[in-house]
Image 1: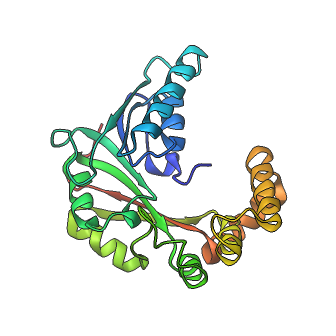
Image 2: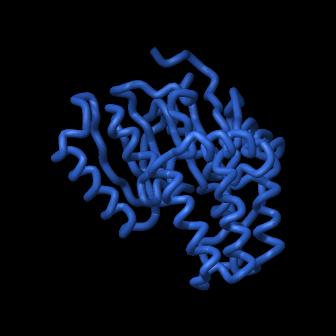
Length: 240
C-alpha cells in the first residue's frame, strides 16, 4: 500500500532517493522497481534486514531495471549520515509524528536534499487521528508512538521554516480510518472479530483494487483520509 504518489513527486529512473524511516520498505520497493537509486533508512535494524532481503529477491527475480540500485542504512533521523545535497528526492512517510524533536528531522532532510529537489512528507490526518486519540490512550501513549497531531497549515509552516516550499497536497487511505477507529474502540492489541473482518476487507481491496471501493475511497479521502500527503521542493536550481 503506497501513500506517496510517485508521479506527483516527479521521480525518474536513475535519481537518488532517500526513504527516511522506511519501516517495512513499501515505498523503497516501488522506487527500486522503477529504476531509482534508493537508500532505505531506518532506526530499526530488524526492519532493515528484511528490507535488504527483499531488495535481493527483487534483483534475483529480474524486477529491477538497469538504472536501479538499493541499499539500507541504519541511523538517527536527527543526525543523518549523509553529506549535504546528497539526494534528488526525500520521502518521509508516517515518521515525523513519532519524533519529539521533529524540527531537527525536518532540517536534516532538507540539508541532504539537492537544491530543486522534491520531498514528500506524509503524516496522520488531523480529524481521523483525533478520533483515535479520543478512543484509546494505548494507541499513542506507547514507546515509539505518536507524540503529536498535525494541523495542515501548522505542518506547512514548520516545513517552510525548515527551508521547503509547498507544491501540492492530498489525502489518502480513507477506508483505513474506520479500521483504526475499531481497533481503538475494542483495544489496539486485541484480536476481535470486527477488526479481523475489516482487515480481510482491506487486504482484499489492496489485492483486487475493485472499481467500487477505489471510487468510494477517492470520494471519501478529503474527509476521512487517514493520511495527509504533502509535496514540497527545496528552492534552488531545478534538477535536470
